[in-house]
Image (cartoon, rainbow, N blue to C red; front, top):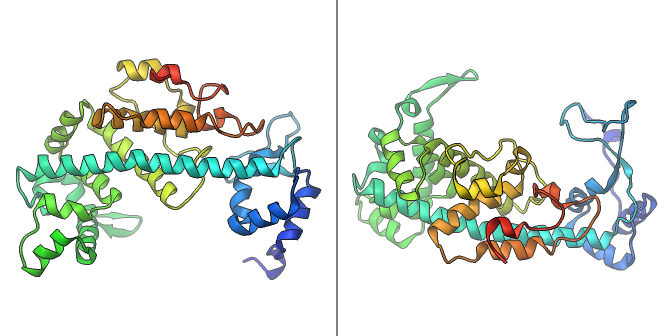
Length: 333
């Protein structure tokens, strides 16, 4: 257990600015820096300047890595020419990037809801509450880590909670009259996580109905995409940094290696773990939903405004090089 001596002391904003200066950060305007620290927070900004701290090396001249996280260990001092104003600009860039990602994700989420409600609801308006449409493996009760679990019951429980707290007029209308709520109505209270998990839980026959509408030939790839997009969505909604984050699982391109779009972009494994990989699949889906969409142009324009910080390159986002957004690979100007 940590003792009070292990807890870092509280410092005023002016003292935090002096700490950054003592560690080699360039701060052209102290009052502005104090104001930004008070608005954003020292530790929120520290995630953006962390790559700019000097790395530590082992006896062989290789990056020293943390035994728990596997990430490079860095010294408190900053590399040359790290400017506080650039770090704030990087923070604002990340904010705009999150907003654009949410814009693309919203289109996909609404479209997937529509597909599920239409394709599964026309078989049975109450299909969403019936095990017949679910993979039998999901409906079985089993033990996991010493606890009894049933993923289908868990999903139903979450659905019931969302219905109980919903203020959607159409859902309230059905509840007040004690009427069954059809699929195309109830889905209006689903969140992204509930929607993506429902598709994952569906039996193979039902999954095929959905991927056929999307032009997919592999249901497991769509499960992977929906899951990774959900993780990205949650980060964006929670205002977490996304520009240089590495995902635990790479984006899958199983069943798409022969697709001209993915052949042209030729995503590396590193790219599939970074925001570049997410942008690639988001655009693949968004342009299927709305062929006239200019979402990718907006993303490209924003990416090219990323502050030029030597220790924060485009490759940290998964891009193939540091020249900016690879517009030619996406067929845009």
